Length: 421
Image (cartoon, rainbow, N blue to C red):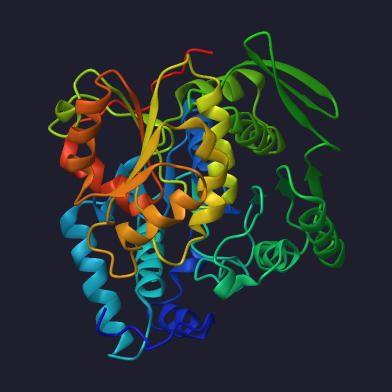
């Protein structure tokens, strides 16, 4: 962190410089599936990984941010990188960088490339950190496949104020001649992506044109140009996961995998803090009769997806426990949820100086029509809800950093719990 520039200027110059000093590990990677988008990147990645692993492949994965430990970001053949190897490659990167300015994400991405290049695998799933065009991951010149999940408003300070501008940044990972799977998009985003692909002669497989995915009679029906697959619903809960599942299946189909592999991808995928049912632990014990859910979504599209998921659950008094960063649009996130909850407790996001003050978040929630009050932490919120409504449904939401803190405090949790549909 001492090497971090005073301001973040999105550029690939620092990454190229360090990778050259490290001997260009980015040129010695397994076949790469590069994934960008505003929402659904992680869930889509998890489903693609589950499918590849069901086919017997060894799969590396790079994701961000982490929830509990940094090691989660660098998965080597299905396991988080171990402490000794992580320490060694970070030391190697720091030495090669020679004290020059470089961002946290840039140097740790270079470290990840070193780890991936030194351990054999069949595939590398590479998730973009921010944007795409100037993201540190976008130094891979010839991925095997590009995947673009839905684009919406987020990180406007870096990516642009409109969906079209943000889509142009996301589409920056398209490469000449490299096939790309494009998930559901707003028309403005779709137009930008299609135009960029045409300039690069990158073959596209577009949702709504080349493939569709829908829920029918408790199953997921996926239809491509020359096939119709009857698949299980995704293990990851929420109606928005139908879209992510469709994108993941389209990617697996493009890579030549069969229907049974696609089915395993949906059934076996796990991705923590995405509408995850919180299991037994110290935090959950504070509201022992409650149904507690955890989600790290933090933008308008995530708020809408959470609202749609809550509407599908059996009726139950619902309370929100929310913490957000000050850089996020709290109004847009909370608006879809406001009519579904009895009230909201606003909490700080631990160890995040950019966190929105609970008093300010509570005030914004009140504007949306939610009875809200600030409290010291999640534990205090759960205790108060237990007194008011012991059998409530509680959704802890608003930040992946908050979700990670909850998982760490609760110690144990049950991932991937299926919703009753």
